[in-house]
Length: 233
Image (tube, rainbow, N blue to C red; front, side):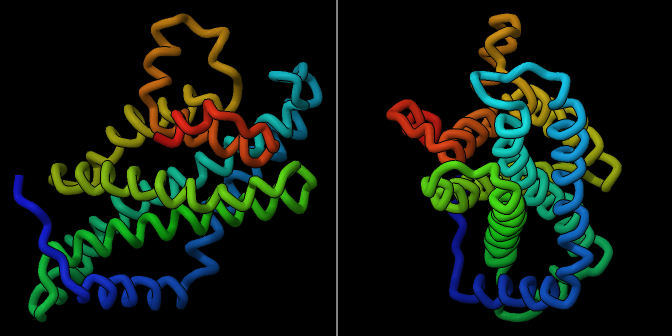
């Protein structure tokens, strides 16, 4: 496998993305910001009133940390699929960049770092919101953003691999329908997996989001124990 040869120009490409983001941050932030809030309102406050406590927690307290993790996952996945593809195929941004001393490796690494930035930003915003709602029970929650950074890096790489393989944007429907949505539904965000068949529990264990949810929930609720180390690894 060919190694990626990067240079300090990666930071120049990343700086360009951050400047563009700063000009449209309200629009960019709104979609990923409001959707988790709707889940908190509809499922946590609405459905949660009829749901019995899960793992000894009120449903809203159980749900909120999972939404922090899933919001981070979707933020970086959308950025490194649709966002990257638009810059590559429609805006011809990559073509302009590689016409300079910037290499394609620099562009790819900057895209991954930008997706990771989106993961940390959107996940942290939701973390602040649930803090304001009184759903954060421990200062261990300060470690959630570093966890989101690692998770964002992983999901950015996965998304970039898919983006590099597909010929058009319509193929992203497969990625989100067949990969992202099952991860979202069966990674312990909405309910414990202990009641599901063994085969689904095993598949869920292989989900990166499952471990991010465990880490976020443990840190937010102050339920820190040695088992979280394995989730981080």
